[in-house]
Length: 289
Image (tube, rainbow, N blue to C red):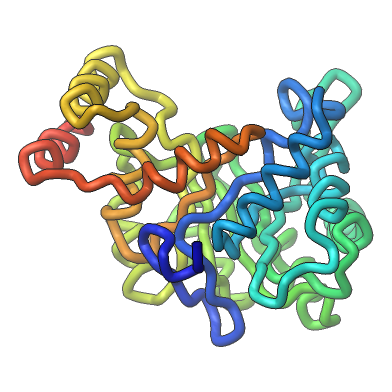
């Protein structure tokens, strides 16, 4: 399978950064609750190698997954990296002893996080670093200028090629853009949670990628019933329908479904290529309302 055969084709985030719209999210390579080692490290390595063999050129990770473990597995599986493979990472959080996700947005924490990603991935410069701010699934008010400026400095130092931001509002995006260009935004968005509709269209006009997380998160029982009914009629799964809908929502949307199973990886790739007939597409479009 070649890169061109993946559903959705590719998206050019920058002159030196073209990725497959179907990517791979590495969060699930760590142990339960994204903490500690996986039960089967060889299986985790196999999933990553299968993703690249299938033509995926966009892997999303963070050194606080595990912590550290996911990036170590990526390096073990894929280093030296193919020339067309782009690894996107995140900073702005850490893991505590209880497995929590406290914020880590000070200058010292951000600089250390970038160096930790570089070291564990075996890279001299990171393709994209997303600044993770906000809550679990929604932005929080306030300025992001101070932490984003730290990443802009690291970009000027040559340690980061491109910048992104995650769990942010339109106002925070504008604030970041006043400091340095961004190539992507990662926010909570799916069929049932479409507060970012206008933002997605605005970013598309600017050529900026939008990377939704929680593709089936936050559904009400009624919304889930509708999604299930459509999936049953199309003889597939609700996740497949949700991924296919996202890929068709806007050309700047990139998918990063995660899995620790080669079989599920193949299912996710196939799901993104699912055809949605007009009747079902209209029904899905109405879920949010």
